[in-house]
Image 1 (cartoon, helix red, strand yellow):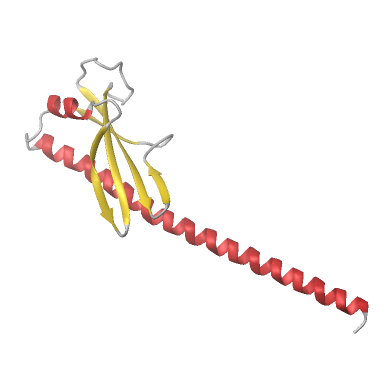
Image 2 (cartoon, one colour; image 1 turned 135 degrees about the vertical axis):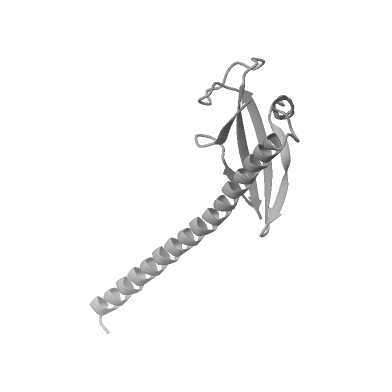
Length: 145
């Protein structure tokens, strides 16, 4: 084997190693994205459950609009609870602020016939944390008297 053939073999090994590492990294990213989507979807279902629970309590008169407003208007949000599902711990916080009919917040302390309720969830999966319903895309719903 001469020097040219040895360099071609070495170049082929480097090329194959690069291809294998790139594919491995790509597969790992796809698996991570799929796992995050599963936990995010579960968080969306939990947020919907919270909204449905408050709707049911308001419709059945187990909770009045004023009581809901007072309960959820805690500075920093009301800690609704913690759910453990499939090895993930979901910490659920609910915040309510007075709003107009379209959900635009009014100054705190303003009495309004509308409350904008926001659900935010922090999912802890091992050493990873996924924020659901926070930032630019919160889960909100307007409840009216």
